[in-house]
Amino acid sequence: MSSEHEERVQKIKEIVCDVLEIEEDEVIETSLFKEDHSADSLRSIEILANLEKEFHVTIDQSELPRMVHLKGVYEVVAESAGW
Image (tube, rainbow, N blue to C red; front, side, top):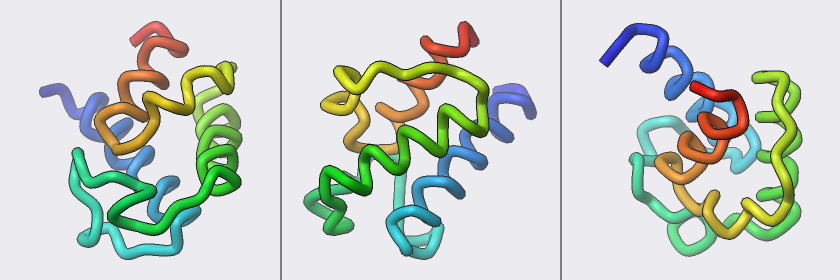
């Protein structure tokens, strides 16, 4: 994978961990925010807003059901940003 891809993945992970108030080593690509990290719907919206600001994209709230773990978040952001 490219370093640019790795940087994007790392930035997404930082945003998610900051919003969920967890350490980066507590989350893996497929750990579920709600079930594994006690995230609620407000946290999901906060993650979405931070991602939009960081990556200068617009993400429809209808994408929230896909944004349940890091892998899903990356896919949604990548589609919105055209990566």
